[in-house]
Length: 483
Image (cartoon, rainbow, N blue to C red; front, side):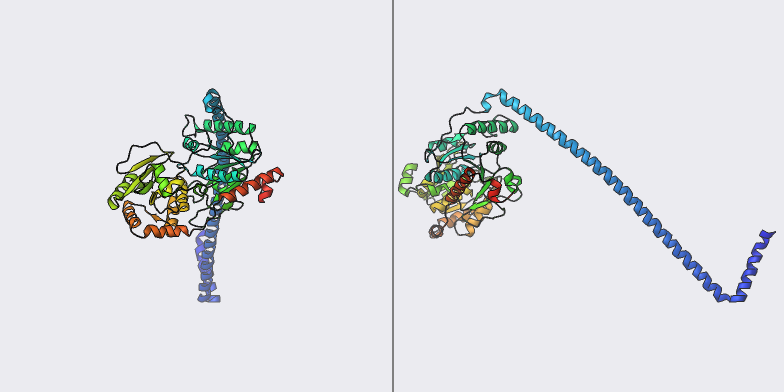
């Protein structure tokens, strides 16, 4: 009965409130209740969202922590596996090298050259580059070093070693990894063993390495025997190539010397690196007269000749040699193309429409035999032409690994020291311009105004300072103020 009466009681209570406070009071009170209820609902919803977010963050953090622990564990496992693989490769390589006696070439005494009997010993080591640049730079510095009493020797991996020997310098040779039948790990250890056996019995005062990457065996041997190692590093590197050693050079060498470019300022982008003027073997060579050079090359004294020295350069996707010869013969038939086959290249068949000369080294003494050149834009070729004063049309070889020949050729053209071509259309235009009256004279005049000091002297002075400091017990790091 009480439950049945409850609605009646509610109505009575409401009637009493209405009578006492009025209808508007009831309306206001109801609005407050509704507002409070909605606000409470919103607060509860916000709290639920925050709680859910916190739970999600906790879950995410826990997942990330688990993944991080797993990644660290996997990384340690991968590192351990890498070390095991490296150790296994080293062991297998050592076994292979012990089995093959020919891995380490037969040792002969180091053929020290020039200088004074008790003079400082400088050993130059070069990689097997695409041209003669590494060897030529080292021979230029060696020539200058001998003038101040140093005894020099060159150990090269270049296949052009026989041509250098024929020129009168007793260069030593070790096959490069590409020219040997062994895997790279085996070759690295055989070369390191060969070098160690060489140097432990006849120690040089300093080792100079010229190449784009210092071989591990060179670094290890020099540091094991405490012989200072200098990296003679050509500049003008391409963008985007591997720069691991470039960026951290003192992990592989004790000193770094960079020969500059005659066409522009060298980018000095590293501390504790010595930057010097350009180095060219042409500055150390006796340049022959045009008549004598032609006679020794077997060319007619009355003839006009254009040197073609472009190696493996390509134009529009194909070899450029035939295109250069065709353009020359059509534009200026009175000028005979003379194709120089590099000492590091395989002997090629006779080229139609041109004279072919094989393996002439060094070429600099003979450059006056030519009215102009069509040349690649490698460091050695460019600086020989500029040093001798030979006008040239440059075709950059874009297939080189690190050498930015395009940048070098552009600098030559911008300086008025030559012409650059990058397509057959540009080649035709460039050759027509070169044979026009006044062009060669203008370029020769610009070349004669060059006043660049050869960097070989500065390099030799640096080497003598290094040798002197080592003999006095000066630490490499103290000398360069780096740790």
